[in-house]
Length: 96
Image (cartoon, rainbow, N blue to C red; front, side, top):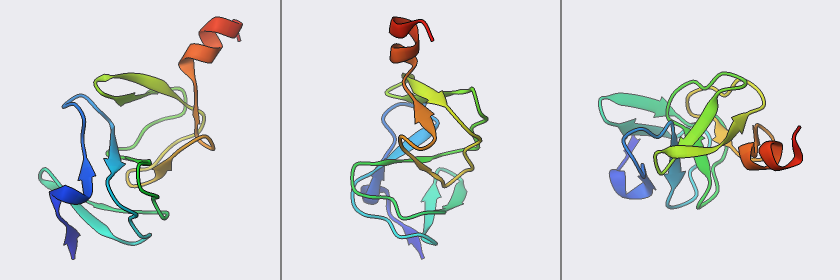
């Protein structure tokens, strides 16, 4: 059964990630816009999952702005966290 809109939030129309407003279990089906997303891992409250496929090296966007760079390919419905996202800011500051 699809999750209702009050279980997650998209901060900006340009975002490619979604923020969970409650814990979302692996295998849950989420209806967003006109598409359905199956959640691939457990998503904790306040964490992000991919609205669409994001390729390694692409920007992850929240609030309409980059919050980091994907360190591996991220599938639609994947949990986005430190295991697959790195800070763009740190790379710029540390000149990595």
